Image 1 (cartoon, one colour):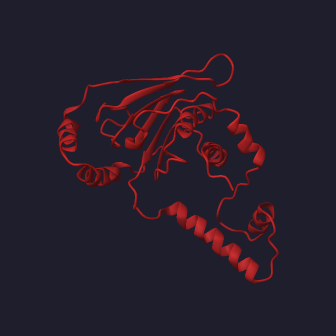
Image 2 (cartoon, rainbow, N blue to C red):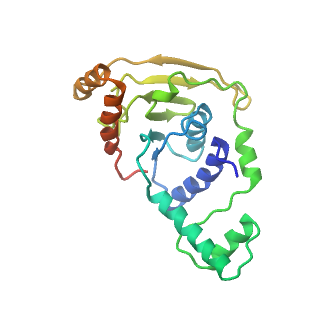
Image 3 (tube, rainbow, N blue to C red):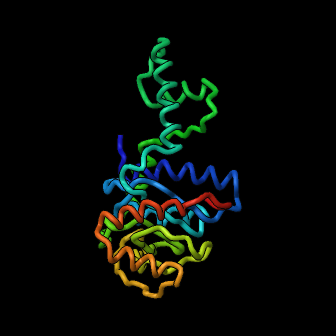
Length: 234
């Protein structure tokens, strides 16, 4: 089973389409996750989050990485419920020999969990969108927030901040990366430039962060992530 960015977005695409069908007015997507470098905190995911949502009608995406050790969330609970149901089916004599069989059995069980089935071809289609010459984003391991408000362009910061929401802010010296595409499909080169204006509300905190050892930055970053809250947009 694949867990790389192409597989992640093959699954995410169906969820986002479903959300748009249920709530056509949604325009902003906030994602909160952990930060494994082979999955979410990687150049391929950065590229895909700055392109695919815009094709579905989303106009802004933020991806916020939590610190290690934050524990489990609602998504883990949903996954555990599905696994327990599958275990009960096997214990009751069901023969589940493939993912498709499990999917059909879960549908037949009238579960309240919304289920989607992803074909291998859908993952391959995402793979085909990834440029061969995708450049690594410098500073990837320090990134805690990615914001994209224009296709192929991301802005990243060392901490998540929503002080000017729904508008973007310039706290924590955000770095801008542009994935440039030619007239064919995605071939890109990345360049970075930074903006330096910082609102008064966060400049003092940034000074604290920059003057503290790394472990203190982690502690402050830990609390900052609680600013990621539910709004009318997702």
